[in-house]
Length: 236
Figure 1 (cartoon, rainbow, N blue to C red):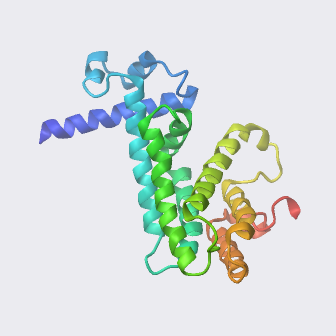
Figure 2: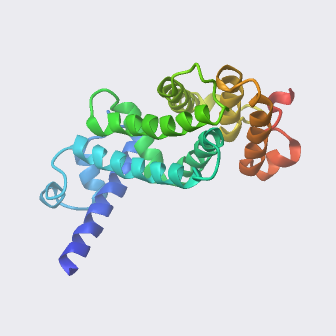
Figure 3: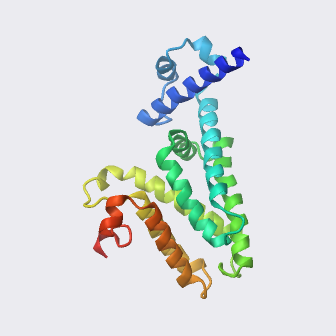
């Protein structure tokens, strides 16, 4: 048992070091030697756990993806309407991405390795599966338009959410000069405001907009909640 505990501690040390290096220079520029040096271990000791950079990145993606899926599932109460779960679940995931370094690293690595790595593909595929289940419920409950394909809706939601975050990360340095800066809660709110008119049933659109507004207030920064920047970004 003691050997197993030491092995897990060592593996955790390697993952944490890799997350630091990947975060500093990106996956492509991260050198194997730099990761080894950051761990303070010998190459032989590291090879016992990972024999190359990609398996190491895959392990980070797998761990972070599981954390995000668990957060989404916990947010999706079985007694709550499916469409509410879709909205609430994305805000719950955003919160984890903002507070959990492994989940945030998994998101970045999945984007960097997209199309070339099985763990990266599953990162997004599993999201679509989870969201599709809620979309199917939302159609049955009359909140999501019945003429829409639930999987197509789910791909749009997941793709737009992670795509918007990728764009936000890419231009974040430009946004720091904005007064006030638009935070990620506001960006997610804007995303849903654009999606709702196209996918919500006519009878449910008004209620879902109210639900979205309450969700934004629940996750808003204290200063944003006082000034109303989350409800009306850029003074609109």
